[in-house]
Image (cartoon, rainbow, N blue to C red; front, side, top):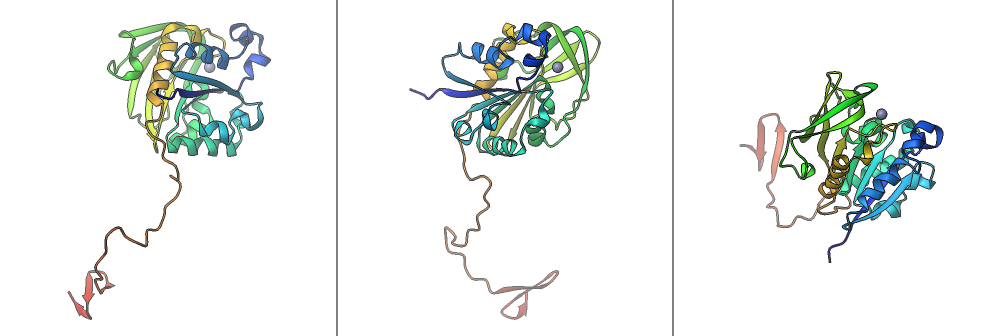
Amino acid sequence: MKDKIHVIVWNEFVHEKEHEAVRAVYPDGIHRVIADFLGTDKTFSLGTATLDQPDHGLTEERLATCDVLIWWGHMAHDKVSDSIVDRVQKRILEGMGLIVLHSGHYSKIFRRMLGTTCSLKWREAEELERIWVVEPSHPIAAGLGQYFEIPYEEMYGERFEIPAPDETVFLSWFEGGEVFRSGCCWTRGHGRIFYFRPGHETYPTYYQKEVQTVIANAVHWAAPRVTITGVENSPNITVPLSPIQKKDVHFAKAGVIQQGGKNL
Ligand code: ZN
């Protein structure tokens, strides 16, 4: 039998403890709700991790067996240790999948992997978000129609300062008029990265069926096909696979090649 896909849902888990309005929607934390709906897919093995745990719950041992890491953060991005970001980056380059949700666009790990500021426009006004499926044949869009709507969300608007995605699966339109690339795919090293926009902490977005479908599809898509270790090494291969003939050539100066003391 095929091994299960090992998923860790990481959440900074700060809003839920500090703000009653967020606790009302996610009493046990956003990570718990995401882990619970993903848990209905029996091909997944679920775990959670939070900022306040030792190593933010992301020890070498846990990451070594993690296939897909899901990331939600907002107000405590700067509390995430750089050494843990290094560790997560290494695993992505080896093939681990990363799914970054909503305000995770400003997380250290997302900005590290993409290399840009990942800034955007925003507005909190309980507005309608219509998410258009612009790549209906993409595996992350499986089971969705032409579009779906989230009745109350925060607005994120372009320009989203990201490198051009390898694939853009979703495009959001907001009641107030802005648009946003809301489902974006990249590959870094051997790892697949997916950014999915919805999920403001005061709205019940992660209870919505279509949103759950997208995240579950993204876990299947981002799961590693293969894990390549040692990607940080650049070995000098002094013994070639097949013999290399000795050329006795000499590069005297620009444009002049000498062999056996003669210019060629
Ligand atoms: Zn938000």
